[in-house]
Length: 326
Ligand SMILES: [Fe+2]
Image (cartoon, rainbow, N blue to C red):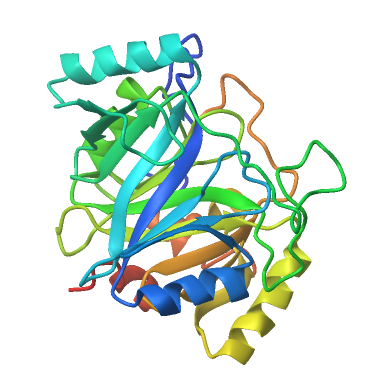
């Protein structure tokens, strides 16, 4: 392995893109009220439904009825990740592929705001749900947008995150995640970190034209099914700078940033929500992956040692903290 691995085509350009985007995500929290308060007041989400042990939240430009469901649990972590299929045929195709691969699937119609959902586990045990039918978000009198091509009015509160952007899972088996995301979901690996033995240590998968939607990072502890972080997109980099001040005033733990990643060039800020889950605010600017034959960019350990884009050293907890914490 050289210090600067060459880009290489790792997908079949004719493979249909059967998954449209990352859908709603469930987050476990041991501090439900405090976590809800964080997402509403500091992140700018809106509470849209409440049950005894869970809170449904919506980001202002999500066309779907909810974006995040906070679930009261003893330990923080990620619950089910929902993925929207690109169409009914894509859903059926993916269901067949999962079953042929020996992955147990079960359908349910009991998920709020979604129609029939196909439940299954990703290789490391992360629960997932694939759906097509979805309930659209209906703004109320106090969040009706001025323009009809926007889900809800701009909240003007805290970080004002616009939508969910990506999820980064910790996994005990990165190669299994690569097969799952590429072969079964039809995702494309846009960038990856390779170890000195040539094996992937972290992989960034794009479902459509975004640079990435699903990320798997090696869990150095070998534990299965943990979360590294859940990321939300803001309209501008400036909103991330302002968000850092919002978090500072609120006493929220800022882990690292604002700064710019070398990998994927994302402008970032990481905080820990009151339940302990790492939350990222990110902005990719205008960067998209348009090339259907985009070749996967690999980063070696030597290249990683050159730090983040503008020289920031990656903080130690970024390599050690995940939820549930050990
Ligand atoms: Fe991220």
